[in-house]
Amino acid sequence: MKSYKLLTPGPLTTTDTVKQEMLFDHCTWDDDYKQITQEIRRGLLKLAHVSPEEYTVVLMQGSGTFGVESVLTSVIGTGDELLICANGAYGERMADIAEHAGIKHHVYNEHYNKVPNAQKIGEMLDADPAITHVSMVHSETTSGILNDIEAVGKVVKEKGRVFIVDAMSSFGGVDIPVKDWGIDFIISSANKCIQGVPGFSFIIARKDLLEASRGKARSLSLDLYDQWKTMEKDGKWRFTSPTHVVLAFAQAMKELEEEGGIEARNRRYTENNRLLIEKMGEMGIRPYIDSAHQGPIITTFFYPEECHFTFTQMYNYIKDRGYAIYPGKVTEAETFRIGNIGEIYPEDIEKVCSLMREFLEKYNHEEKGGAQA
Ligand SMILES: *Cc1c(COP(=O)(O)O)cnc(C)c1O
Image (cartoon, rainbow, N blue to C red; front, side, top):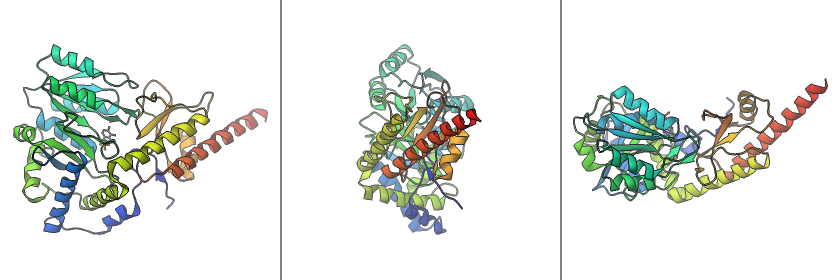
């Protein structure tokens, strides 16, 4: 099988040592396994800079969306109202979830290349006292923009509301002091910046609010409170857990620590990202998000001017030579995306940029040759 590295923001390229953990078929009910779950939960609390007295961690089967859906449908009661701040597809997905579950909600749509404005959110909360919860995405993977959850969290707390953050593609790669930033529920998943494989999401939650959500869930399998109560007893998951994924994740957590924690990982990602934008710029390929708001996870690029190739042609050329890139997702422009998280280093960025240069030169050459013939 011909392999390639993933320059997609999850699933991403993992280490061999993480993958090797999945060769063992672990029993789910024995103490060793339950201890692994508990260690993961303790480790995640540390990464979030919160105490076990105030916060807890719930692991939830399924991809990241299951985690977001679990929180929104379990903690927002029938008398509550949610304000969703959206500047990309993942913010819009929260509205979709709310729609499906019949959660009363309002959407503050911001343009894809702009961050939601904390002051505006404050004004919306003042104007509508019925709003009880505010949700938003941290790293909007749609564009690569990094939203200012610190500023928004401050406002949401000042106004006495509950703050829910989808930090799917940032947690573990960007340091987030969860309590200091006024976050009550934060969601991420196994296959993003912790660098595990896909199979579960995790929620770091304020204990008192979780306790207060008892009986509110609209779904059985996504009932966050119930999942927590079962897991809290001794680390046993409610329903079958993705054992191989859990073992791989425990190893990925160790490797994050060995790398030097979130700070070191953030440095590597930031350097990957800086180098990527610099090298692409040398070829006349510009990012969609301005540098003040560009996050260190994934970058959306405009196609170079006067280009006539398709994404598939570019994708196949690069994939055949060892890297998988990502199509664009913003609506108003022709773009493509390159992620730089996972087991990816500056030499990979150099390599993919030189492949891109080769592709552009080859393509232009063929175009000219074709025109002459
Ligand atoms: C990856 C991601 C999700 C979850 O997507 P799944 O396909 O369900 O894993 C949610 N929000 C953001 C910002 C993401 O990057």
